[in-house]
Image 1 (cartoon, helix red, strand yellow):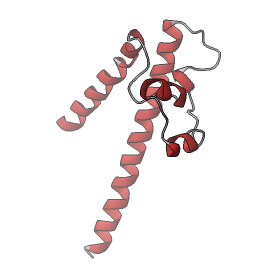
Image 2: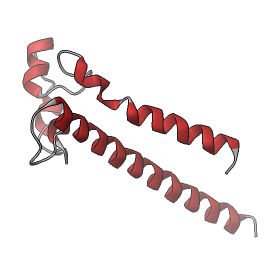
Image 3: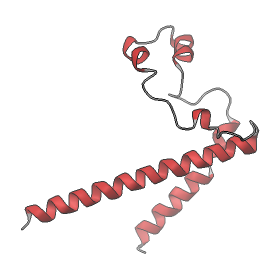
Image 4: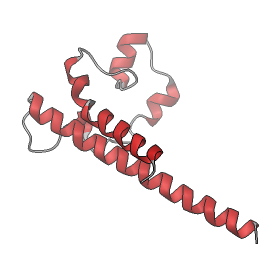
Length: 110
C-alpha cells in the first residue's frame, strides 16, 4: 500500500471516529434544517425548496437507527453507521468513476 493511500485511510478513520462530537453541540447542524426550522431562522422558505422538500427522505432520519434507544450511545452508533455508509458510497463512486475514466482513456489512446 503506498503512502498516500495509507494517509487517506488514516484521515478517513479519524474523521469517522470523531463523528459523534456533533452530538455535544446544541441546536441543529448547519444546513440540516427542516423547512419549519428554516422559516423560523430566516423568516421564509424559498418556493423551490418548499416544493422539493418531500422529494428525498434520509435512510437514517436524525442519524437514528430503528430499535436503538435515544441515548448518547444509541445516537453515536447511528452516527457511526451513517458515516460508514457515506464513506462506502463515496469510495464506490470514486472507484466507478476511476474505472470509467480509465476505460475511456484506454479506448481513446488505441
